[in-house]
Image (cartoon, rainbow, N blue to C red; front, side):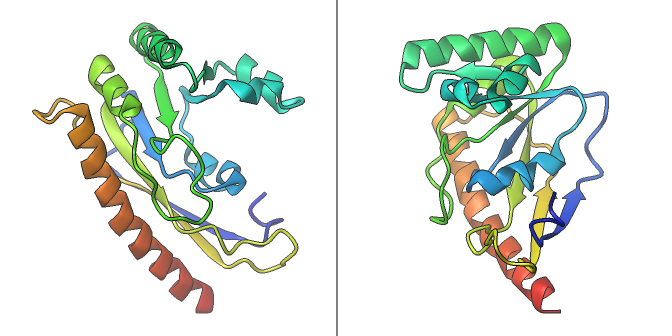
Length: 195
């Protein structure tokens, strides 16, 4: 699909990831093109936590739900916490890995939005290590262009979730790391596009 979009997609994976370990993957959420870019980082035995309204998207919603992905009602905080409890149970019972977008919504070219704490609370509850996934800026991609340049996706080494920090502190630390990483990846992708 990336070729149809005129994207040269390069996914770089840390050699520290193990196929027999479940992780909590977190990625920056930019726009609909994440389906083409970040989804290429998907590993076997992984599901996502997505907003409940996705189930109403024709065809996609049904496939998304039937694939075992977990739907969350972001407007109802007690329901959202219940969903995280369900996710925690699935991780423990089935050894699943989970993908989440800690910003909670698409940034639409505004850089990195503030990270919410749900992903980090889930990582703690499941004792999963956190794998950061960062994608270079997608805001210049145009559907009607044959050459949209290079997009880089870095799957970084796992980080422990069992630190002395609060979930808020962990979220802020990752948010700051993502701001730096997004800037560096975007510069690198622009240079690669010109080469």
